[in-house]
Image (cartoon, rainbow, N blue to C red; front, side, top):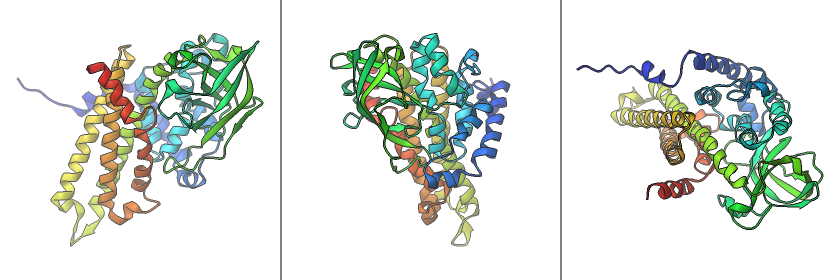
Length: 387
């Protein structure tokens, strides 16, 4: 029996004609609105707020969201196609900033009221408001269950005190989906509140200076007796930890895709450079050591991407894929670690210079094993499910 492998056929297991239409549309948006300015935005440490509105107008922000809220429903591969094309701008910061709504809005969609969805989801999808997720605290890191920001009930309000840090889009977010402690210690005392930036007592730090993701504004947020309406509570009081855990799966998928695309771009840059760069009288691809290095890079990228797609398909089918998405994130990040490292090595001194894409990819890559749950946390989750 003969078997034929078709890369196009394999790709079409996940992406059909409609997905490719979305991909082309986002590609045009990226080429027209992002690529001409991305280097400048990287140096400035932020991209213009108007980019959210432009992203909404081409449908990017609404992909995967309900039509009645201004979105365009579809399976998870519509979002993956869009994420991949935005990552092709070569700036993880731009992708992370534009994508902050995808970790801020799902708890409201999954557990919020219809009124909350109209107030806090619809204007974000329209590009009129910026949404961020606020979980991490200065003293907590990955210890979500140990968070210290408090929300004490006072009639029709919660009085919120504490702080959050490393918040993507935190400097200019109009609203944050915020984890607070409304009960006792541990995971069962946590709730989720939508806190608006105009709330008295709400303040934001200057943009935090980071190793990578320069174009995403990242902030520390402070709460000093912020009076937040009880009607902003998402779901039930003291049940927020479950909403956070649900949300992490979306975030980890998004980060796995980002890692795969970071590696893919580094691979493409390496191939192009190795075909042109001459050393000792021949191009780099004339050396077996370079060819084999690139082969190893390409193999890792292919395997990681296919595994991520397979896990995404299971999530989209409603299957429990907590173990698998944790594995996919870890594997994609380890691949991106290796491929971006090798890309810089292939470029040599030029790979260490500001202004080359692989230098930025190398820097941007480093946060991926930290955000959305560290590699170590992922391993703990996986171990509990297999041991």
